[in-house]
Image (tube, rainbow, N blue to C red; front, side, top):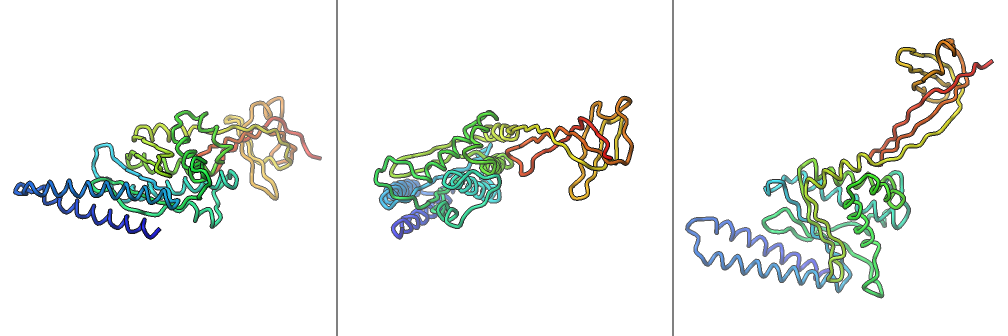
Amino acid sequence: MRRIYQIQEDINKTNALISEWERHLASDSAPSSIALNVRSLQKKCELLEAELLATAAEIGVDVCSYRIFTLDDSQPDIAPVSGALKTFQSAFTTIYDALTDRPKERASFRADTVQATALQFGYSFTGSAGFVLTVNDERLLFDDLETDLEAAIQTLFEIVASTQPENIGNFVPKVGHAGIRAVQSWVKSHTAAGLGADIEWHRKNRISAKLFKQYKEWRQLENAIDETGETFIDHITVEGELVAANLRNRTFIMQFQDSEDIKGSFDDAIGESHHAILPKYYRAELEKTTQVHYSLQENEVSYRLLRLEELE
């Protein structure tokens, strides 16, 4: 890794010189030699970047380039850029954890998972909001075998490439609700600031995963994930005190000694043909509908009263 760090330092120094010479080049009185110096430094930077990829391939380090761009090609503020990188790291770790451990309802990681997926800053691109990140990858006997890190980044990009809710839902058994929520957080970090992204994942001198997504496409994905979910309907029987019933709104409330109140609706469970006394204890048959939104922490639960039976 020492050689990697040295190359990264050389690239950062070269980029700093390029930025300095470009400022001089902006002057009307700048000599033509400055343009030659800039081109020479840019060529040097390209050679150093190629050397970095070659060295990384030799020692088992994956390289991720992440370019961020705006709708009007202006420089983005630091807050949304850091937010995009932070949520990218979180989504990457969550997907990796789902593939190497198990899909989860809520994100929770072991220390070794966090360490294995920790992306380290390498250097930034000159003249644009772009960054090169590195991460240590496992060494395999055969180079064409897929590593866990590759599987994670490829799965992440496959989810992001989806545009229909049903396609996104197909990934839930693989990455869990936590994985979809982590992806949605990453997506929102782009849509909130009107950002696009151009990302490449390099391993062993090849691009093993690539993603190019403009703001409009991030927005479409955000809407698709918001619409992704499942509906579960269960019939349950409870015993409690009916404390309220509104015939106009067709709503009711039941209370219980050791659990939360149940509020819901009814059609003909209470009315002229089915009288109810308030307050009074009843055995109630309910239809419980659970709406699971993959992008949200909490599910939506509603109740419909089907039948009441007085308790003696």
